[in-house]
Amino acid sequence: MTPQDLKRALGSGLLSFPVTAFDDDGRFNEAPYRKHVEWLSGFGASVLFAAGGTGEFFSLAPDEIPAIVSAAKASAGSTPIVSGCGYGTEIAVSIARSVEKAGGDGILLLPHYLIDAPQEGIFRHVKSVCDATAMGVMVYNRDNSIIQADTLKRLCDACPNLVGFKDGSGDIGLVREITATMGDRLTYLGGMPTAELFADAYLGAGFTTYSSAVFNFVPELAMEFYRALRAGERERTEQILKDFFYPFMKIRNRQKGYAVSAIKAGVRLAGFEAGGVRPPLVDLTAEEEKMLAELVEKAGKP
Image 1: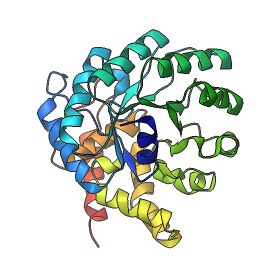
Image 2: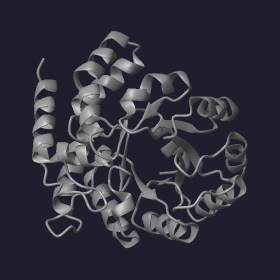
Image 3: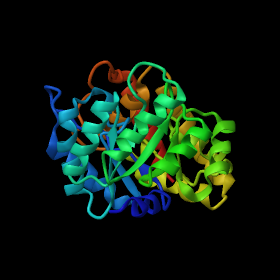
Image 4: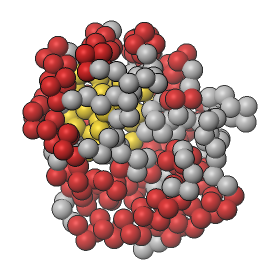
């Protein structure tokens, strides 16, 4: 898949990040992971992201990532697989190369590790990763890696394989400046936690798609929300927000890190052996899992 092929795929529909399955000892558990990815690939997501944020990229050793990407590729049929990538520049370059060797279709470059950096440093970091691979690259704008519009324009000029911009900052003014400046040079992806809560605002800012974490365990509902959003059916999207996403947000907000832990709990409720989360995250309590199970059951009723 060329970078331009990936760019078109990213912009053609809903995206999602499968959770990474672990066994009782906390090791990557390939068989249930493949079963889950195969199931997800049947619901129409245009791209799936292996070892992404919801896939606990931050808890994986770099040498675990190629096996996860290979397992996803073997299970997703024709659905493209993008991998998480990140940390410092040298590690990110190494991950990008290992993902390409494993057959991945692209990378999502998560924020560099720990420290803030000036725009020139972010430019050099992103360019080094883009230069290290022929795959399509997306940058993730959030936390300590906020790319300004002029820096992103320089990167677009310098890196032909930079095809996507994902925002998790919530700074609508900045992202609107970016979409106005770069136009159709990039595909724009919403990346706020529980992105459906922000989807309408991002659509107005020029973003055509987003990554849905809940697609992991309620894919039909996630696809219905995306369909209604793109069709301008505001009454329908607001009903789904009230019936499912706002109650889900209350569970998610009970503890830090539950934006991932609650998704993994949902996957277990859907019947997949996803295992628990790795430290420093913690799993939902039994009471919270019961709350989530009741919400999922209610959401599945007409």
